[in-house]
Image 1 (cartoon, one colour):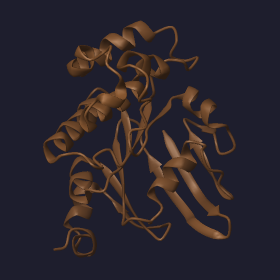
Image 2 (cartoon, rainbow, N blue to C red):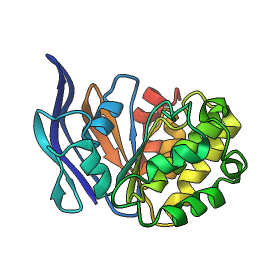
Image 3 (cartoon, rainbow, N blue to C red):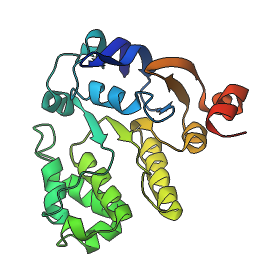
Image 4 (cartoon, rainbow, N blue to C red):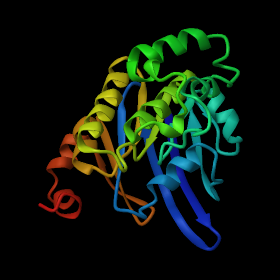
Length: 234
C-alpha cells in the first residue's frame, strides 16, 4: 500500500533521514522503532507531506505522493494521529470529530462515520458537548483517533500514541490499534514502547540516526540480541 524509497530529509544543513526505504503492505501493522532523535517523527511528517524530501520518493497505492500537499495526501486516504494528540481544545468533542470529516472523501459518509466512532468510543458519545481541552489525556487520544477515522482513511499513521498516558490507558490505546487492524485498517506505528510495538506488528524497521539499520517480522526483532540490548535493556 505504501512504499518509501530512498528518502533523504534535511532541516537546513542537518540531515534527518538518509536513504530510508520501507514498505507497508495493505492490512498490516508496520512499526518504526528507534531512540529519540532517530528520525521516526520526521519520517511520518515526510510521508504526510508536512516535510519535503530532498531525494527519494513516497508512493501510495501506486501513485507517487512525494510532492503533493498534505491536504491532498489526506484526501487520498492517509490519516495521521499526531504526537501530543493535537485536538482543538476550545471546540467540543463533536466539533472536533466534524473537523475530521471536512475532507472531500469523507463528507458524504460523515453521519455514519460519527455513529461508528461513538460506538467504538462510548465515552466520547457521553462527552460530545464537552470542550476537548477539558478531557483527560486518554480521552483526548481517543478523540484524536476518532477524528482521524472521520476522514475515512485506508492507512493510519500513529506517532507516539502512548506518550504521556497512564499504563492502563496505554493498553486501551494499543487495544484500539489492534482492533482497527483486525477490521482491515493498515497501520504505520511509531511508538516509544519498543517491546509492545514489535509484539503487535507484523513487520518492523529499526531507525538509527535517520537510517534503517534492521528490519524484519516484529517477533523476530523482539528476539534479536542487538535489539534487546539497545532498546529493551536486556
